[in-house]
Image 1 (spheres, one colour):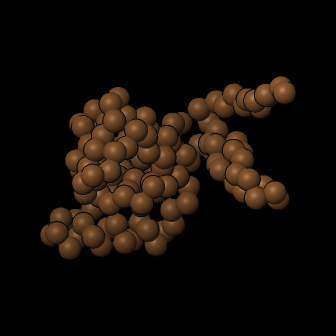
Image 2 (tube, helix red, strand yellow):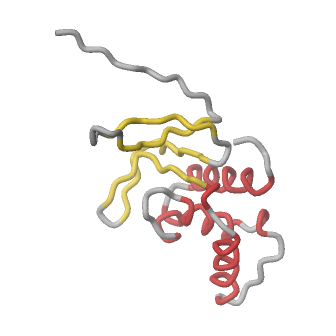
Image 3 (tube, one colour):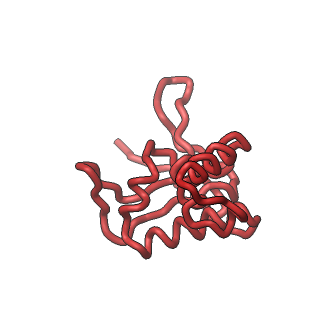
Length: 132
């Protein structure tokens, strides 16, 4: 019996999305996307009993409604949002909403600083149109 693996080499501009095939099995489909960022932690990160080795952020699925909601969340704390792409809190709240794993802003606030900065940069790059 021969075992074969289909390999797809993806560039940084592609996202791997799991979809269900007609036979009910899940398959990985590679999509071109500059809107998706996958963050691999330098060391596994644990928060409230859950351990994360990587998180995927699909910024392209966010809408204007998400942006308005994020601004409202921040304004409730008494701080205005002048330029979203320069506000670290706005960017990280945006990342929490874009994360394909359901997490809250509290999880992102608890990650190591170097990982936090890389995720924040990916969010800023998405807003400013820079390449990820």
